[in-house]
Amino acid sequence: MSARLRVEELRAELQRRGLNDSGNKPALVRRLDAAVRKEEKAAVAAAAANAADGDVSTAADCLVMDGDENGGVNKKRKRSGDREEEGNGTGSLEAAKLEGMSYRELQGLAKSRGLAANGSKKDVMERLLLAPANSADGVQDDKRAPKDGAEKVEEEGDDIYDATLNQTNVGDNNNKFYIIQVLGYNADKLPLGKLSKSTILKVSYVEFFVCELSIHRGYDVLKRISNVISKADRRQLEQLTGEFYTVIPHDFGFRKMREFIIDTPQKLKAKLEMVEALGEIEIATKLLEDDSSDQDDPLYARYKQLHCDFTPLEADSKEYSMFARTGNRMLLWHGSRLSNWTGILSQGLRIAPPEAPVSGYMFGKGVYFADMFSKSANYCYASEASRSGVLLLCEVALGDMNELLNADYDANNLPKGKLSTKGVGRTAPDLSESKTTDDGVVVPLGKPKQEPSKRGSLLYNEYIVYNVDQIRMRYILHVSFNFKRR
Image (cartoon, rainbow, N blue to C red; front, side, top):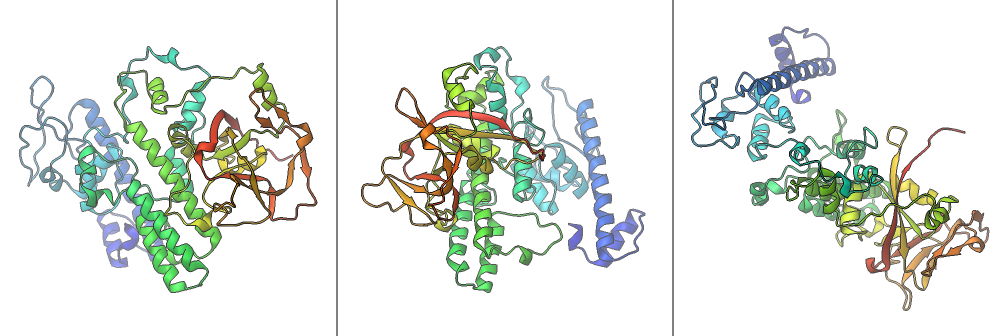
């Protein structure tokens, strides 16, 4: 990284490139970074051109191979220190060949294969050695799969498929890398979904990736931070924050880490949501890497991986009209980020793990619902740049509820005979306008009504269950948010 170089080193690098070496350190860093980016683009372009021409071994070699499918031998340029590769036609890269490449060549090779190209030369080499040889961002080439199964999935389901698997048809930014960028996670340093079967066996290496182990460690550190926040122990908070950023790396740019100390409940909750989202993304990444169904139509293969049946609801059906008539619906609403839906649909709604800090959940660790769309819509985290959202309408068996006006982190310890918690808000649907379905589910369709007698801290009602067996997912809605000011 240019910022780590001393001023004299920065000037030497600029002089070597024939560039202006005057100015202060920030100016030198910007100038050198711009030059490096330009070189990397040139290296990637050269690698792509060479790959297209069949010559996979030039100044920015994309892949060093010994033979083609017909037993022929590809010509390759020799470098001092290069050794002959014997009997390896799979495209995997040997350390000796990588050692013979310059840092810039390694970066170009890494970028051409969809890998992060930052860090030291050793870091880039390790990344190339451990990544699958045909890696292209961890996703199989859909072109290999036949296209004759498109009729197996309803046309209306296409958008939902794209939203849940973080593809791009529902919006250019609805993919896992945009979500990671919004969260602030540094995907370049610890990329998601680059674990091959051989890598998984190397526990010491797995710990450096955001896999299940990293997620649990992130929760554990946040739990310890939650125990210290109330004590206002700045030194310990700085130490624990540093530990968290080691487990879950962040991109702070040129700013110092001490500006990002997790020292308030609000900051703690934000980081907790980040770890939850990364866990959901990890589930989605694993599903996308599963090539067991690569003989199916790509859309149908992904649909099968969810283990969840979708049945399109006709716009003129009785069920649709009941929920489409007004903004207040119930069953109960549950909203979540686009990045979370692969995990939700394939594994169901889940409760936070034991290692997560309880202080991050207003009414304890459970699954949260609302009786008004506007409450759950906030958890979609849509924006003007990314307007799509996905919400569930769930049938929730609430039983006898424990009603609370204010937050209680231990609300999951329900009084005897209670099956759920209701956080009572000051605004709620008019219950007199509720409807009941044929199977006995109450659907509050009333307009918002102020409840002046309710003097708690909540604006809207919240419903929390602590047993996932009380939840039945019924309807999934793909919505587009309108951010136009009235």
